[in-house]
Length: 239
Image (cartoon, rainbow, N blue to C red; front, side, top):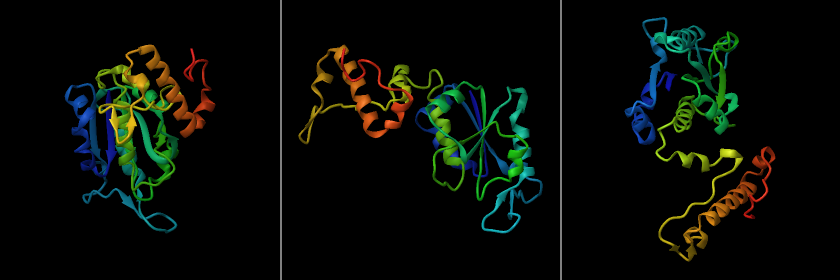
């Protein structure tokens, strides 16, 4: 899979792309991430990418000609499949596991990072974005953190990136459930014990406990998920 990120701060991504699962996936050739400086598409020798907003007001706006040139120049680059173009912005669909899974099926993604007061609206009106995605109902200085979060979420779903694929099936938000609680050594810590069932060796009992614990945690912390998928018979720990 190939992901390209358009940004005015390419160095923002330097360290994260070398660490942990992302770094291993890139080194193994399972994922390709290219970070492109939006200033490379500027129209003047000063590499200017923004200007003052019409009508006045604080902040600057990223220029329509620059962003348009960048998207059109990279979306169909080098004879590769057309990149699915995503604007990282607060007005888009909230990023969730279902969105990450859908994006992971696409061979190429082009992530556009806004900055300042945003991007000239005419880029949207020209239909240059295939999709808009937000991390949530809060404001960030730009789209870089969102693009990195999306890249991490999508990369984990690429076959071979996660060493134990079965762990993906048990994580939070898979099947509209939060993850069950996890424990490891020591068995006792500050008067708190790990549940006996987890050390019983009875895998059927452990599975039932985990399903019930995941349901209880979801009911307590994210009851909205139960509206999307109500509890199934036996999910509460029964036979």
